[in-house]
Image (cartoon, rainbow over all chains, first blue to last red):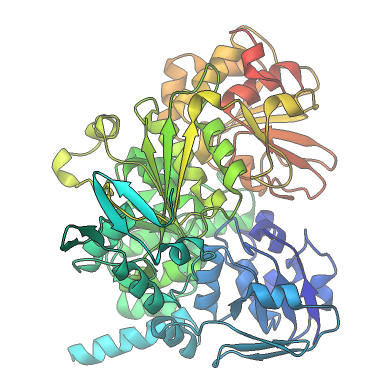
Length: 165
Length: 474
């Protein structure tokens, strides 16, 4: 597992350049351009299970969801940041990408530290130091359990139709 | 604001729990700490003699309670709402691509819900973007979408604004971050991602977390050649790119000097400080603007109570604000124009959903009338909509700007997102009236973007270097 470390206010243009917004929509189209204007090594070197640690306001700017779709498809286990921009946070819930808002863990991390993560219990260990983060409310967990917003929506539509029959 | 005790209208507020409420870092967007917060806020009642009176409510709390069909809501609470409109643009193609089988089976929830505007890459710049546009037109026809505006009508936010599709008290969500612009007319308007827009097409409802609110009170009036763009850049520079993260920003105070177009510019940039919504009260200026578009009985204005509880309160004296410039590569890297004057500019851009309206083009024309832009500089002008374009033609503005050396582009997003038109070369510098100056935003990683008002951009086009518009005679 590799930890990718970035600073404050990483915007969605850096995570996925706007010039590709209307030509790349599938995970395969998105992946080669991930973090292209921030860290050109990322797209070719990222591996399943990697973690991103960042500062405050991660994912600010455009509402484009390609960064979230791409990072999820690239196998990012979680993004741990001091804070996230709100549209990015919603997009992550909708795609099932795990975001953890935990400033203490971000400040504690030193290169080479082992990171252990228990999302269900809201626990995080960074280089042996333990942190907790609030578990998600039930409304949001239901979306994650379904595998994202679209599978959740399909379930709801099926249930609604059944109840009308 | 005194964090422990506030006195308003002769009543004392007992707020022993308030410091924790106000100083807690940005509230978790999932409302994870909802229960604690509810407890906190419930404790913050007004003590008036022996009676306990409930606190006033913010704009966001009132709109969301109404839309959720409950008597009251508190920050952090999650509510289910049915938005009045869902805005999507060129990304409609990708949105409907996610739900093809579901659309076939269940259809769209309500053909009046979506407002679809093709604006981001218009006219189509490639076979792929052309195919996207075609797919959107076919979808609109198949499902009988009521509110569709094809390429050339204008930038989506301007079109929504002009057509009266965002009204006071409405909840409007859109798969574009600048959906917050409609706060200019007192709507609760906010950006979402494509997947959520897709789900909304099918179900018509979603969850929203009730945001905490920030009260910004404006005092005084701006000086000559200083505009709403300078005011909002100044505020963002002050509170930072995440200064209003997850929050509803309410503008209060002396708003009579701000036209509806200027309010649009300010609400538009709310997202650049992280705001969920950025909103103005409905007054005579709003009503006059809406009168030519909709009947007054078609909307009901909502505004905060005077006793509402805010996460933060800020005051700005407009008379002290100078022309401002946001320097690369952050919108909150804001400096008074004097500190960056003289920097050479390769391309000037006047347009976008932030500053492509008639009053913006008018001030540029006042500065450039009978003059020619500097030899080494290019000027791109992009009216925000066909309506703006026609008005500018009638006033002779387009001819003035063209004669001055400007290139006039068709209404749309144009150079703002770097997909086509006005892309920069490595090492070039652009001074733009847009809302973002992120690295790579205009299509080139090695270019620099500075943001400013239309007056500053026009004055700088004349000289070829960043110029204080107060130093250029009109």
